[in-house]
Image 1 (cartoon, rainbow, N blue to C red):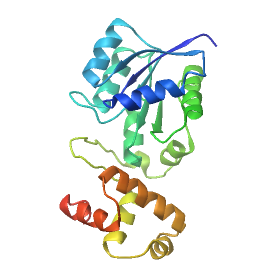
Image 2 (spheres, helix red, strand yellow):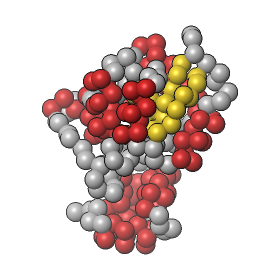
Image 3 (tube, rainbow, N blue to C red):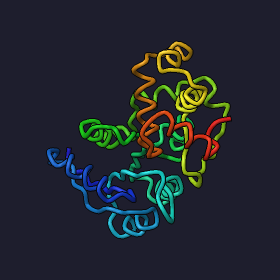
Image 4 (cartoon, helix red, strand yellow):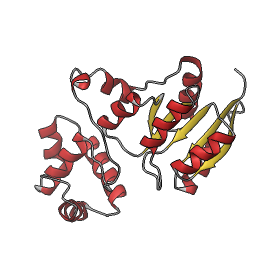
Length: 216
């Protein structure tokens, strides 16, 4: 396959640089520009149109949702791959409806990012197990979701359930039993939430959830 030109939009410079650095071994993939918000991204696309855009969701000025809508409308040949921290299944369905060619989480390693780029160039889309799970759910076509990134935190249903049970003082083992998942999975979800909220333990999770009304 010929050289694939890629742009990356994310308001965290270190993350952008890290992705670009991690992709250096793949010599047929060339990053041609970076953007730190959706408005900057659209302005640069107007001048230099890449084959693929790696786009974050939450960005200042213009977020990734609006940017994806604009790109797929104005430049239908450009493939947009969402690269975000939001593990909310509703966002996946909505972004695919908006024309995104793929949806990756920021914990994705460089080999999968490369595979996603290659696949969207070959087939027009990239479906990993996370996206597949969302798209095959029976109730997906019956529910319409217009998400907003104005709030600071968006939780998946699983994250919200774990957080609720943590606030009810259940242990990881008890939560695992109630949710029919492994204790290791529970701990992984708690660790991810603590990192996102900037807290260090379960007590911090409880206080953050109460302060920000994250649980019912």
